[in-house]
Image 1: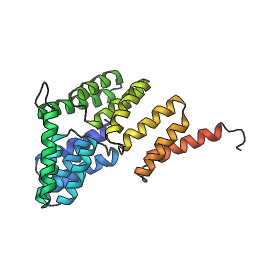
Image 2 (image 1 turned 45 degrees about the horizontal axis):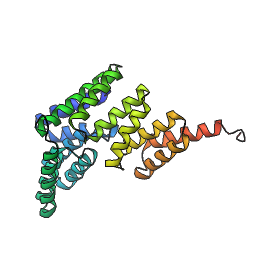
Image 3 (image 1 turned 90 degrees about the vertical axis):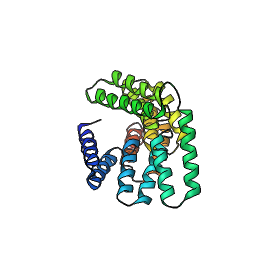
Image 4 (image 1 turned 180 degrees about the vertical axis):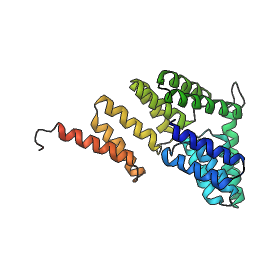
Amino acid sequence: MDSRIEELIRAGREAYERREYSVALARFAEVLELRPGYADIRNYVGVCLSLLGQPEAALAEFEQAVALNEGYIEAQLNRAITLNELGRYEEAQEAFERAGEQEARAAGRFPSAISARLANAHAAVGELYLQAGAPEEAAAQFRAAVALRPNFLDIRNRLAHTLIELGDLDGAEAELEAVLERNPRFVAARLNLGLVYFRRGDLEKAAEEWERCQELDPTNAQARSYLALIRGAAVAHDPTEG
């Protein structure tokens, strides 16, 4: 996690604890501009919006958090509560039941809420190791987090990104395929899968993944940049160009 994101998260949480929800919302929104696939911050944004009297917008954030982390019980419950608040009682009941099912599936060595906190703590330490230039230690922390909560897809994606940095393309591909099997619309994971193919020299497959990213998110600047890189590489290797 770079220092800018870390500072924004710290400031947002401090404002949240002071019940300055508008200030917290602004800081968390800045985090999501830099890293939109951060489920924990999506959940925080949803809570802030709910407390500020914007349940429809809050619901959208909780749904994003759940899409990123299927096993994120807190976000599942917040979604259910918000649906109930909006008078969508049947959907709320289904959401409460789904959260209960997730809780039961997550039962293991630790209670679900504790395992979620431990997983997020391991992930936070992993980010610190990355910031310190120690990807091997970061990967170990991300693996510990995934072992606790394998459905925390954003953490699995961070593990995959770290494995790419370490040159373990097969390991990264396995993690990313597991993520995309659960959520095919997870753009950040698809971007990383394209990177795996690019590192292997399979430009065609890389382009396919990044084009899919553009279909899912036409404003995604990273996908656009990667595709420009692919096209530049293709031109450089085509003797008929120029």
